[in-house]
Amino acid sequence: MDAEGRAPGPTLPPAGGGGLEPLAGVPGTARTALLTPSAEVLEFDDEEDDLEVFSKDTSLAEANSFSPSMPISPSSMINQYKFEDEPELKDLFITVDDPESHITAIETFITYRVVTKTSRGEFDSCEYEVRRRYQDFLWLKSKLEEAHPTLIIPPLPEKFVMKGMVERFSDEFIETRRKALHKFLNRIADHPTLTFNEDFKIFLTAQAWELSSHKKQGPGLLSRMGQTVRAVASSVRGGVKNRPEMFTEMNDYMETFSHKINVLDKIAHRIYKEEKEYFNEMKEYGPIHTLWSASEEDIADSLKGVASCIDKCCKATEKRMAGLSENLLPIIHEYVLYSEILMGVLKRRDQIQSELDSKVDALANKKADKDLFSEEIGKLEDKVECANNALKADWDRWKQNMQHDMRSAFTNVADNNLRYYEEVQHDALN
Image (cartoon, rainbow, N blue to C red; front, top):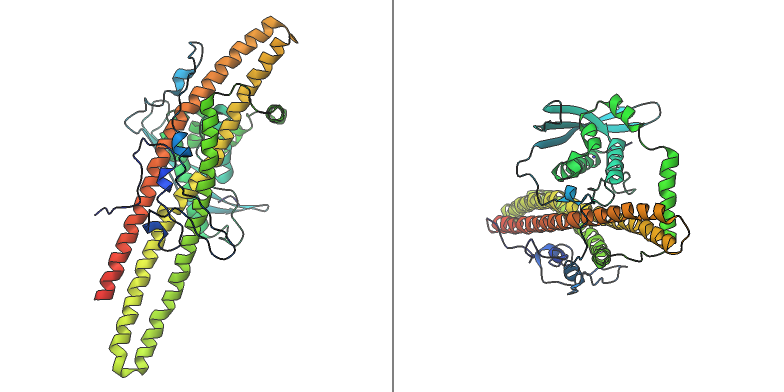
């Protein structure tokens, strides 16, 4: 099936800062981890070794200081990637809701309602309502990557879930996927280039049979195989000879980012798991004290008071758990997926660069017609330049979004923790 007042928080960098500094305020012990921003070592007990993750390594911050020295050719298509000229007024609103189960003779799957409201002139109507299944979202993502190989396409939730974590048809899983699909479409809608992609428009407006017909118009199997063969050949040739330094720095940044965000994802899930175990244990104590009070008349009032306090603490803990599952876990995991996407984007940029390098080498070795290769090299130079500038602009935009999302997530967690302890302390004193 295919399914979906402010208190001081961790120390965070200004919006324009570089690196993964928003992660530096996260410690590593379970229940108090998100309250102690000064910790630098993430400690795991049992079979896990201590992981020195949030050290004073400045490599990420340094990786933000790029100094590109790329010439701008009038013949390139760079102007279409001027992301700073984004519209101030939102004119495209998308909602993903109403999951619906479908059972056929060969499969069971979930579809989601996608409602689009817009004031754009290129749309024939101001409102659309269609139903889409997960594989339709996968198709859209692949088409966006095909059309914009060096833009950062937002991630989709994974197709499969880990066995034993959650049931694939459960309401919890479907709702989590729905939220992720909603965010995926809205991130595309907010992107200054992707939002005008023709396949995106078709995805939002076409009925199921129309979308199915449009899918069949894509590149055939042989074409896709040819692209795969070229990608493999590029990787076999080894590293890119003339890669600009800024992209080497991007690659180093993403390797460090990927490691740290994956560790943080693991820690966040462990915190949630321990919090849930604590909550389940605490739920049992309230009724125990209530029953106990029935057999101890002398201390019955005190026992009932303890039971009432435990019940209130359970409710406060449940709200804190909801805050983690809604405001922290999805954000961190989304950037785990983003790290994989960024590495793929950098590889595609290198493949374009490698294709240019091979043509230049062939011309230098006089293995082909010079006039023909000179023309091809000119086109590839424009393609590389366009790809470089597209990635550079999208990279800056992505980092700003990442820093904003991380800052918001951890600030929300800090606020929730403060409210939790204030509420628990109030209950204990009354």
